[in-house]
Image (cartoon, rainbow, N blue to C red):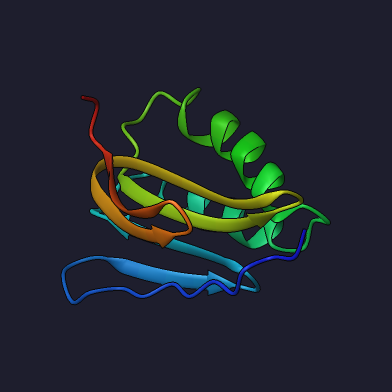
Length: 108
């Protein structure tokens, strides 16, 4: 099955957007873990499966630390498609074969 072309766009607002290869990350707010999260995205971008790598590395970086991480959004390719991770007041609008939908990093 062929991959669909993917475009990522960011609307104006407060925050930091970084791109490392095919990994795009958005950070909203600042915390002591900001540099670690950016380093994780940069390292994952060089992996054979960036989406899998960033998911594994962010779990260790974000969810096991003692500091509150900033809200963030990550988009990265995986072997089977595309990974979208959202945390906090961050949203993503996704248009795909199934139609349009809006994802949120806030718990339902």
